[in-house]
Amino acid sequence: MGAEIQILVIDDDPSLLAVLETGLQLEPGYHIRAEPRAADGLAALRAQPFDLVVTDYSLDDPQINGLTILQTAHALAPAPLVVIITAFASLELTLKSIQLGAHDFLTKPFQLEELRLVVRNAARLIELRRENERLHEQVGALDRAMRRIERAHAELVHRLDQLNDDATGNSGTDPGLTPASFQALELRRRRMRDQIAVYARMGHEIGEQLLAERSRLGVQFTTGQPDESEQVACSPGD
Image 1: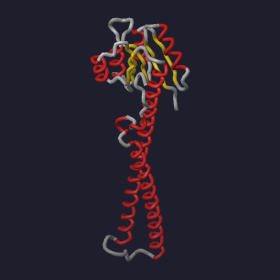
Image 2: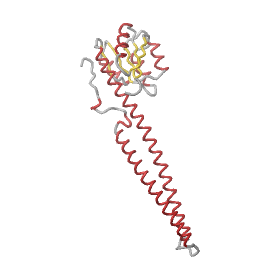
Image 3: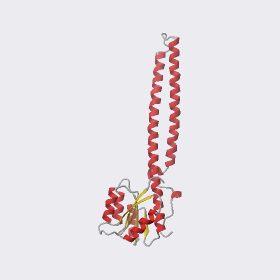
Image 4: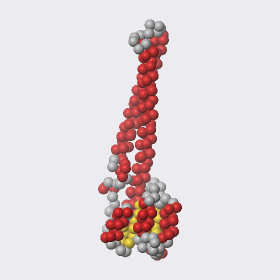
């Protein structure tokens, strides 16, 4: 795992909040911020970037609930994943949360290991997103390098054509060109052809790297979603 996963936990039940915070702190690679008040949790979410938010649906402020936190999170860029904890997992709430983009649910009462499984699954997706960002940067760098090589290659070809024109006058060998001058011109041509070959080889190698990186991304290049082999079973009660 790379940089720590930044997790915000919001719950107005102090005892449950302490259990959630302590239970997640035992996992390596997580940095936990716990907020018992909905308004403070919302302010923290807006003030600093988090990778994951774990929030109770019912909070201490009647104007703020888990869906409010979820909507606020998804308005951010980048948007953190959100896990909602609820004691009332109605079909209506479930569908509404899915529509708003909730990553997962936990229904009270639940075992601490269930929470850890959900968070581990989210952490793997977060790492995948980070890897996609790194690959995007690498592909962009390769694209820029490829364009520079193509421009250099085109310039060398153009200069070689100019040398040919200088040597032949566009219609044959220049009668005023001395043997020594002709040999020097031929040497310049050979050097330029060697340069062109080098640029072509570099372009081919970079092109292969570019294709390889794009192949690694596959369908994840734009979606950031793991394939089925990357999923972790984390349904409550498993």
